Structure formats: C-alpha cells, structure tokens
Length: 529
RNA sequence: CGGGGAGUGGCUCAGCCUGGUAGAGCACCUGGUUCGGGACCAGGGGGUCGGAGGUUCGAAUCCUCUCUCCCCGACCA
Image 1 (cartoon, rainbow, N blue to C red):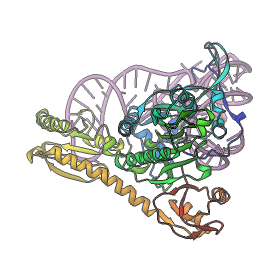
Image 2: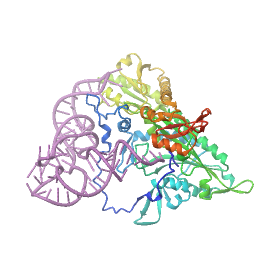
Image 3: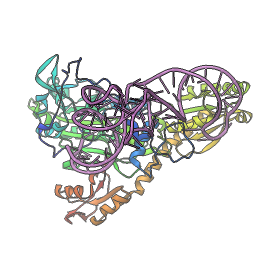
Image 4: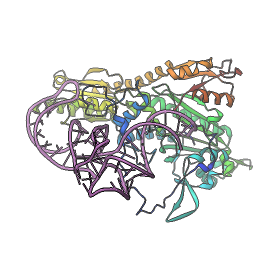
C-alpha cells in the first residue's frame, strides 16, 4: 500500500534492484570506508557572529530544504546510515514515533482491530498476482536472490507493502461470512528503493503501520476505508496539531491495486503539500488475485472486499515541517515524551540546595499529574545554554526557577510555541502547566491552520499557476474536468499534482482550469513532497 | 542516470597548487572560577588523512581506478 500514491507509469519490472546475501565475508566488504560527509551540509552557514557551541540551523526563509536537514541534526532526530537512502532514527526521533504509535494503536484497538505480524520476505511470484500492484511496485522492490550460501530457487522480495502475503494468508483464514469482518493491523518496516531520498519523508526503509481488513460487502469495506481515514484525521488534528484535508485521490495518484484511495493532505511550512496518511478501498482486486472467497448466509460463495490503510514515520517529517521554526523543532505536547523541562538556576551551593528542594517538590506534583518532566540539573552548562538546547529539541514548555523566583513563590514558564515567558505560582502548578500545555497544543493547530488558509486560494486562471507556485506555493483550489490528460499537463508544466478531491466542500459549477470543460467541484493542486 | 559539490579526530574545516610523514575551533576528560538567554582559565586524551593500486628515498598532498554522501534535475513512496 502506498502512503503516497502515483504508481501508474512505472518502468518495466526489469528495473528491479537485486540484492544478494551471499557476499563472502572475507572479501568485498569495505570496512574502512565508513567515514562520510553525510551530515556535512547540516552545519554549514553561520549567521550569528559569535561562535556557537552547537549546530547552526539555516534560516527557513533562506533555504527551507537545508533548514529541514539542519533541524533534524540539531534536534538529534536521525542520522544518515552507511547505506544510501537509509537512516538511523535516534532516540529523540524514535520517542516521537513511539508516541505516535501509542496514540494510533489505541485508536485501532478501539475500532476493533488486532495486531499481527507478517514476514519481511515475500515470494517474488506473489507480487505478480495482481497486475496493477506489480506494475506499480516492481521498480522499487529489492529482491533477495542469494541466501544460505547459494542461489535461491525463487527470489524473495523485501516487502514494499504486505497486501500479497497477507491475502495469501487470509485465503486460509476466511471461510464463512462469520469470519468477517477480519480486522488486522501490523507495525513493521518496509523497503522501497527510491531514486532520491529525504530523511523521514522518503527513505529506502521506513517504519509504518499497515491495516488490512476483509469485509463481506463493498459497502462495508467503504465504511471501513472512511472510518480509518477519519482515525488518521483525528490523529493528525488532535495529536499532531496538524490540520488536514480529507479527500479522494485521482486515478493516477491512487494506490497500485486499489479501487480508489483516500488521503489526508497537510500543508508544510513552505506551502508544499504532504500526504500524511492513506486509506484504500481495494474492492475485490486482491481477493480475486489470491482467490479469497467466503460462503454467505445464503450459501453462495463470493470474493471478499478489502481495505488497507497506512501511516508512516513520514509523519515525523510532517511534524518537523508543520511546527518547526528557526530555533529547532516544536513537538506538540501530546507527542512529547518530555513535555516540560525544568532548568534550575543557582550560583552557590546553598542556593542550589534551596532551588533543588523547591524543584523536587513541584516536579513530584507534576509527575503525579501525569506530566512528562525532565529536570536539567547539569552543572557544566549555563541556563542560557540549556534554554537553547531544549528549544532546539522542541520541548513544549520550560520551567525556569532561581532564587528570585523562590522569594516570590513562583516559577517562570517559557512556551516553546510562541516564546512567551510568564510567571506562575508554585501553588497549583500542575493545573497551570496542564492548561499551558493544552494552550500550546491548540495554539500549534491554530497557527498551522492559519498558515494553510493564508496559502490556500481559488485559482481559475491556469496562466497564474506557475506564478503562484513559484512565489508562495500553497494549495490551489481549481476546477478540474476529471481527465488524466489535463492532470498530466499541469504536472508537466507546473510540477503541481492533484493532491486530492476534497470530500467536504460545496458543489460549485465551473470549468476545468486547463481545458474549460464543465466541472462541478474544485480539487487541490499543489507541489508536494 | 545527467550536472554540481564533498570525503582529513565526535562535528565544522585548514593543509594539497609549490610531496618531507597532520593542525585549528567546537565537542570530550581533569582541576578551578562561573551560572536569570549559548561562561572562562589551565592542563589533557583522541585522527595516518573514504578505499585500492601506482609514481617516489618519502604521498593527506601527484597519477589511475573505485566507493560513498550532499545539492539540483529526471523520477517518486
């Protein structure tokens, strides 16, 4: 399944990548060539005249792409791996993923799904069973041809998605309508060999969840497809503080093997679109390819209807680009393991003792209130250094406490999202902190929404497309006749694609922005990641 | 795959043109003074220069081949 669609005009299957596990260990492996300049571009420019101890972050306005890689390095989210296109997710980055997993997993369970695990390796022949599917994925599939010291009878593909192995299995699990619906999810890694990769957004290997369900009717499957799209929207909005637009993908953008695909589309800080999650109605395509049938209550035999839906570590990239600023990333409180960092301030031992006593007292209360908290009591760094470090890492709220605060029975609260510093009484601090975290969570959403609205506009004149895309980018709401030719023309001439056909919008008679044929609703055109 | 850039301690980079066997800043360790927006002093540990081959008395430096990463393009989860 594709978290991002657009597979229809791939090359032939011959373009596949062949990997081998049969490399003799004594030779051929370059052990010493590990030094690279991978993160070399990450620390390049310097605007601050005074020497900085830590990573410098390129301004977003100067080079957004560079800012993105800088900020990932600065927040220690990921490293480049020795293998092209692969990445090492560092603890700070993985912590965000774990939070995402926890939130999604709960929603999956609450909607009746169970987790399972299917194998990494899939017989190559499986991929060929669904025509569109193999056509869509073949070019980016890694194939294992050797193992165990010899050539394999049948090559194994490293899963780019698991539809084939899962439907081969469901065939045995499903006999009767009483076995339906079958609601399974799996958390795993997948591999898609990409020509060009970017940390989190498009890596050769990535982590995700893929849900695969089976239903008795087309309608049931449609309901499931939309239900999970809704789960993704809820997750994006409530946890990531990321406003998204639900919509349907065009034919050329849909998943290879799907009847139709829905997605949630988000706007990044630079006005480009990012597909944040997809939900596919597979109809009977895979059931027919793998001959998965069930007996109805009436005794007839029918192929089952299927859905699949996925959301990946790409969402970490979305989080970075939706909320990050020139000082680093900003983690929405609901996805932050450390929601509050405490920076105690003191000079002398007696001051330290008093400050730390107060810190211990209120951190205990905060922990009891369920707040993720970290006390930065390192003595080798000044408070200012710590402020910058935690801001870079995106911790939503900082509490500063020094002798002057103790005198007033207060602490200083510093918000990461807007930089505001306000004093707060030590009494009732858990309540104040919870309220502030809530305010940050909603503040991030509102800010992202305002940004998206600012960069969204109806466009009825195709000649303005490039002008707008080159200046501010953003979402261009235009009428489209539904033809793939017009879609293709726009893509070739402006690099913008149809992100989705929004589901919630007023019907409006108009004419296709490209060919002037009649249209009854607008679609979103945008340049995308 | 095409164009460009780059591989030298953990990081950023100098040295390479004009070969003589490695240097700075940051980070790290020790001690001390500091600590309300990226502190300072002193001392210290760490690299054989992406890899292979070649030229040479001698190679980070010259030559050949090769691997890798980054950016742009093509392409796109």
